[in-house]
Length: 320
Ligand SMILES: NC(=O)c1ccc[n+]([C@@H]2O[C@H](COP(=O)([O-])OP(=O)(O)OC[C@H]3O[C@@H](n4cnc5c(N)ncnc54)[C@H](O)[C@@H]3O)[C@@H](O)[C@H]2O)c1
Image 1: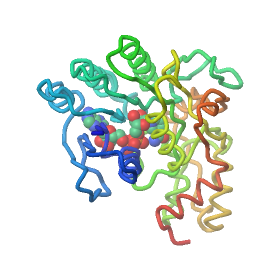
Image 2 (image 1 turned 90 degrees about the horizontal axis):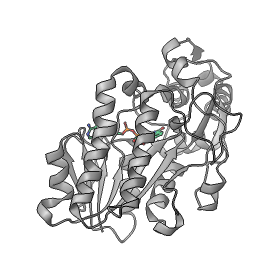
Image 3 (image 1 turned 90 degrees about the vertical axis):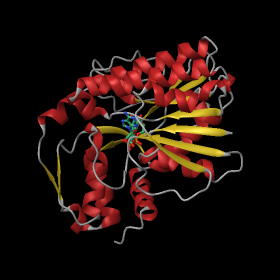
């Protein structure tokens, strides 16, 4: 099968590509992104195409391919993340909404009913929040990013219902620890509070220690994304989106895991420097979820924050 990963140059896109390459059923992977993959994937089956999801011509060239569609599966991961979608409304709409529409339209026009996995987010949930978000909770996003993701879920469901695609969407928890540089996501602190001190850098956390987050580690989310893609269409039923499992972690617990696995000196690098803008967005997010539907579909979750930090140290070969 030939796979297209939009946002394939990003954090999760590159990890998904590596996981897919490790198995035998993938002939070619096209990584489509405005930015080249930072880690450089050396594999003859991988092709990088630089381009914008908002560029209809570029998307059609890949997916419709002049009426001879070759792409059997699409991971649509390209997105402007939460902080940026909030500060630059036009960019968020153009990439997160118009970009998805372009991909869906191209998939429809291709006529081969490709399988499409859309990376949604738990940011579809917002205030007023019940104590616990369940599979039955009505999404009420309170930031443009969450609104764009929710509209995306509905579009994927409708293109699926019409028989244009085999569509599915997963609501991803905050993924930590993200290696490399901080990104523009409002949740960026959930990685930076671990990553920067472990790399010898002082970190001013923009939210208070009692802030709760619904989180998972990169290993879990990547295996869940691939599982979401692999599951037979019938496993999803009428509902084409699902909230992925995760764990509830406070920032204080993140620092405790940092102390336990990275040492006292690393934990002391964390200070708390309030950022009203970040706090205002994070305050509207869901932190406690119950995800029986996802667990029943075989999706998995990291055991603990300690495990997430340990995996980061191992995967990124951090010297303690
Ligand atoms: N990482 C998380 O915590 C998290 C949580 C919830 C949802 N998600 C979703 O998962 C997906 C992947 O996230 P990630 O963490 O890998 O983010 P990322 O920022 O590392 O990757 C997104 C990629 O999209 C690319 N991109 C942005 N605008 C584009 C455009 N106009 N055309 C083509 N490519 C464009 C970026 O260059 C980037 O490489 C995103 O859709 C994100 O919204 C991630």
